[in-house]
Length: 386
Ligand code: NAD
Ligand code: MG
Image 1: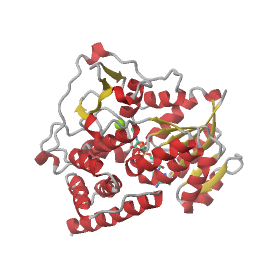
Image 2: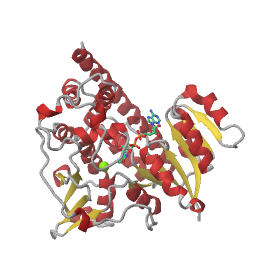
Image 3: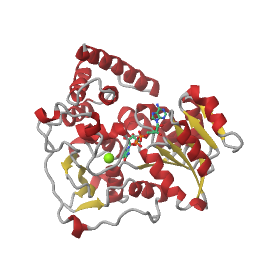
Image 4: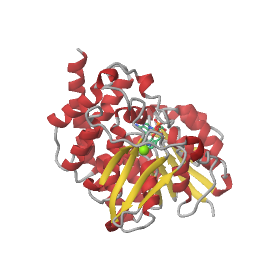
């Protein structure tokens, strides 16, 4: 039976890895919709090559150009945020949610409401609106499969076990490119240095998050929604080789770990085939060559994002959405050369101290908190850069 698949964020790192797997077994999949924000040429090429039914570009002004690029192909063109939401109902039974940032919230939520299976890479939406998203998936009966390598590992280690039997979940972290640097040595880190991750090849935003370790903090919040064992049972362990992707310890003190090469196509393939397995072109794990696996405790003093995320998670309400929005704004400013590397966590902390919003009960509430936090982050940054 062919699987009808849609990919939100098809032009990105996760989106392209998903298409790479689909390309290798073309007869097994029908591509329904592919989406992108502004990379029109890449979107049109991927839509043509995969035989997609619909291609959606986020930027409304690019509608005409997309239509032109798809002329004569029979592929429908659409544009704008509402089109991204509407296409979630276009009939896919498996959707990859791989838009980066809170921009993915509405489309991801629409996919969760549409039913079928949602493979979730877009962690920022879960950080900002986890309670609402998990509830929506419950109501529609959507199967939510985590794609983030750590959460996919935990899902595999849980293998359907009861969360009541779980004593501890350990999220492993590579520690990023600056794992061994002092704070003083982090001050003049450039965007190019920050996006060069030692083990993983990823989009720019998540690469910066890995360098500040904000990524691991966001993943803590993500894990708390996907696997509600309580925050005090989720810990972070630095493991520089990125071979163990995470672990679950049960109450009998048996610990299960999932291992693999650091290649996102492995967790994506797991979500694509679940509950079965498919072959991937990924490197087999060669532990004799790797030789050793190292572990160390994370350092919250050098990586304050770890502390801030745990505090925001414990506070709950709108705090995780505020933290995420402040971080998105700060990372964009860092990548744009407007602020320094150490300013990112400082700005997030300042926004968390200065801004609050009521506990969201709708997606609109989440987006209002997100917008409010971005405005305050803008003020803080303006003060920094004058
Ligand atoms: P990326 O920057 O490579 O790609 C992002 C995709 O989202 C692109 O297709 C882009 O066009 C689209 N997009 C960006 N802004 C948009 C907007 N405003 N509206 C609509 N579409 C928009 O990012 P990525 O590295 O592929 O990451 C995607 C998501 O997956 C992120 O949430 C990230 O945290 C998560 N993730 C990524 C990896 C990885 O290895 N890259 C691993 C784990 C989790
Ligand atoms: Mg991850």
